[in-house]
Image (cartoon, rainbow, N blue to C red):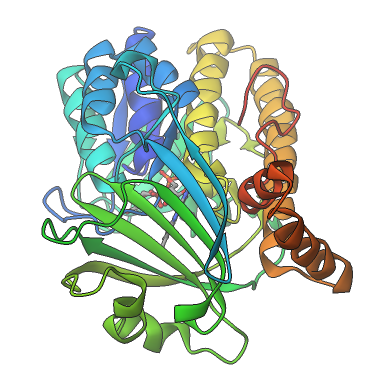
Length: 394
Ligand SMILES: Cc1cc2nc3c(=O)[nH]c(=O)nc-3n(C[C@H](O)[C@H](O)[C@H](O)COP(=O)(O)OP(=O)(O)OC[C@H]3O[C@@H](n4cnc5c(N)ncnc54)[C@H](O)[C@@H]3O)c2cc1C
């Protein structure tokens, strides 16, 4: 029997939950299906909002300090329509502690989280793939595929989009199964021919066959998202990216791809975030289209709320399980709003229907004389900043 929460999954959400639990004085034990040394690839969730960094700072000011020092704050943002600039905004430089966000590749964020978790005394079981979950009267039993088992008063399921814990508990996801395809590539900087260190969005990039392209800088490289067309083969574009990528880079820029992948914009929310003494968090509970960066930022908000719920419930056999019901209500409502906000971004990106296309074309024309039209084009691919979640951006 473990004295504190058992956290399934050492992704960013599970690591955050473990760290936040330790900060509240709870023992925390993490199961991870991968071996300890398996590297995690790709920039993936690259945008950490200040709210998220502040949440992590409550558990580890040292971690937050590392994130702020290593993360990049883009000095500006630009948007182009068919190669013509329609918006450009520069930010005033701010000291790291006041950064509104940082751009930090997810594997590095996970390394920093893991180091902080080890410092805080989190226990890890690596190579432990949770395979069976049994709800008992006052605890939860988790069995790994290799036969090891753990019993704990509460389980936080942070085992990602394919969550075994969620599936074993029979919790369905509401939402779409397919979606629009994107190819994502990390390309190393070429110091001789630098790309701007700004976030750049292209509508109908002329060098990308009129596809939309997002370019996001991070320390040492840029992440490029290419929005596929219906007839594109995303796997082929991801497998051999330099053909389409080179024309998007400054002339002569080395095409050194450090990671490439493809993904579908999926939008789905679990029908409940709790069952018995199990709390779902992060992608185990919800999937959003990534533009707007709601995946990881909301997952860490879930982690904080899950730990609050466990602390409020109390670890004993008489735990006040109403705190878990509150977690379900509050974080599922937040997830619905996050999904709606990400859905607005998605609807804009896919320009579904003649009205959206006409509005975008009209804004691009108007932006020649009306800066607000350019600002509109610049912000819309990321959805509304405020999704209407009480007390939280995510
Ligand atoms: C190509 C790509 C691009 C993305 N881009 C963005 C982006 O730009 N912005 C954004 O916000 N998000 C983005 N995301 C999503 C982002 O990566 C996720 O939101 C984030 O990783 C969710 O964290 P998590 O901890 O919930 O799940 P995960 O990161 O999936 O972590 C789950 C962990 O659980 C482990 N695990 C799984 N099953 C078990 C099991 N049975 N037992 C034990 N351990 C298990 C896994 O090995 C993993 O370590 C992207 C994702 C991908 C794949």
